[in-house]
Image (cartoon, rainbow, N blue to C red):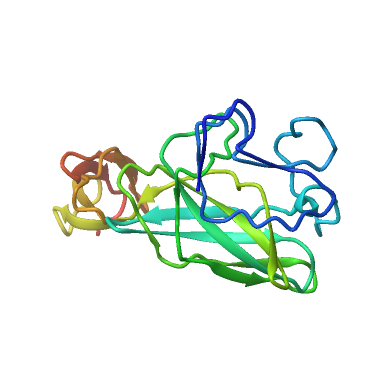
Length: 239
């Protein structure tokens, strides 16, 4: 389904209860949230519903807590993320992911590109906590962020949360120290350190600077050009 160009929310879920499963929809260009769970009874929705410990609130989809994402990285074809959730204790949830192409002013994005057919299951412990690493998610060129929903499994039904805060997708890189010359060096003698940074996406070249620190020699910044850079340190001990 495509839900787009609404003046207010894309989907507004009233309460109490609801048991509304909102999955694999494309939501974009809506004036307010992609999904808004109304937990206060405000006409036209109440905006972002903050998570609460143990998720005791009521309202649309019982105010289902959203997941939290971190360490979102990619290579040329796939994305992975760390995910955590606090909710009802000893309960099973389904985590569903969405790629973000354009940022939303709410910081929650909507769902430009739903990840179809990949569902992660998390079960909370006695304290209501669950965490894990996402499955490998297909990357689509142009996506800049990742968001997700959590759905409490209730028999044949599912209660879907609002979208999580969007986390930028970072390209994975590998750092190599290529050389330090002269080696060995003498006390007080400057030496050059050369580093290279390889991108996991061959279509991209690493830019910026790498901070290089050596014991007894301080630090310097190696500015990258075409993925390689060097800088100079002066040692206070032979090495």
